[in-house]
Amino acid sequence: MTALRKTLRTADDLVEAGLLDRSSRDDAARVAGRYAVAVTPLMAGLVDPSDAACPIARQFVPDVRELDINPAERADPIGDHNRSPLKGIVHRYHDRVLLKMVSVCPVYCRFCFRREMVGPDHGSNLTTDEIAAALAYVRGNIGIAEVILTGGDPFMLSPRRASEITSQLSAIPHVRVLRWHTRVPIVAPERVCDAMAEAITATNRAVSVAVHVNHPRELTAPALSALRRLADRGLTLLSQTVLLRGVNDDAATLEALMRRLVAAGVKPYYLHHGDLAPGSGHFRTTIVAGMALMDELRRRLTAFELPVYALDIPGGYGKVPVGAAHVRCGSEVGTYLVRDRAGGVHVYRDVVAR
Image 1 (cartoon, rainbow, N blue to C red):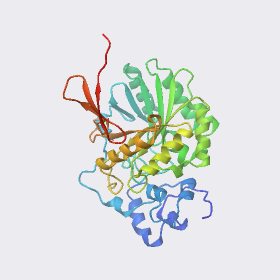
Image 2 (image 1 turned 135 degrees about the vertical axis):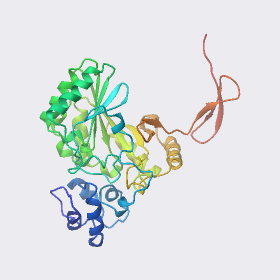
Image 3 (image 1 turned 30 degrees about the vertical axis):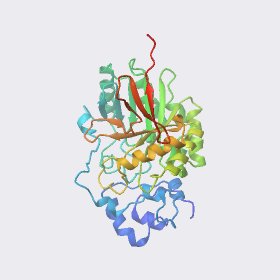
Image 4 (image 1 turned 180 degrees about the vertical axis):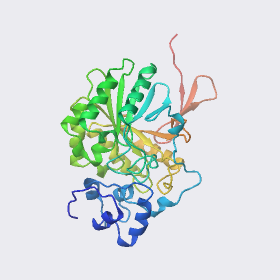
């Protein structure tokens, strides 16, 4: 495939680039009429057009099944609106808030839980007055210790704007942690220049960057260089992965991804169960399947390499870990039945000094 220089945004772009068969053009155009499409040159270059099950194409190329909406799916599957006291702020947990400054992304994932809220035809970036109001809200709530910058993708901000918001948030005494949620280092790593890395660095606050990555092939040389630029500034790097049928719903793929992330200096953080986003049913696995995968990953990975398998309860009730209950109470007080990696069950007793 010839190297691409522009982001692909229409069905015709995808056909011309060889990422979509011409016979699927009209269906893809219908999907694009409802949900934003964007595939960066780097991601387009990773697509294998000869592979009908290409895990990269599956994430970014429109599929007519996106128009099949199950009644259980929701435009706002994790309840952002219900927990939003004003535009740009989501206050779901007492000690942290989301700050959504932008509504655009470098790519648009076909399973995005905010797909009804992001893109050029959905929502808008915060105005200067709206940013001021959001900052005033954070200042006025002294229980807020962490601000999570999300969107859209906050790395779509210019270094100047990113520096401004970093400085403004860092000046709030009770805000101790800034966390940026982004896909940019993976899908458009050229945006993570030295100026951007410096812009989000705060000398008086802990700053972390949670990188969205779903498949080991996404960890290209440019992506790894972008991650190093962030790590060199002393930023804590975390990963967020969505469990996706046909992309990474097998132990070998997830094992490879988590090991490569750790080798790149990124701590695996969350493995998200797919949200009830409209038209995303073909991506979701069952929770039972996810639990079985986590069982297998526990046998293969160290604790440091293991992400937390989490479910965001629909309606705005927050995330909970989805566990396999390795430890449960025994028949006597102070005893437990503990299941090991191989499936063996052992009795454990509390031993507590008085």
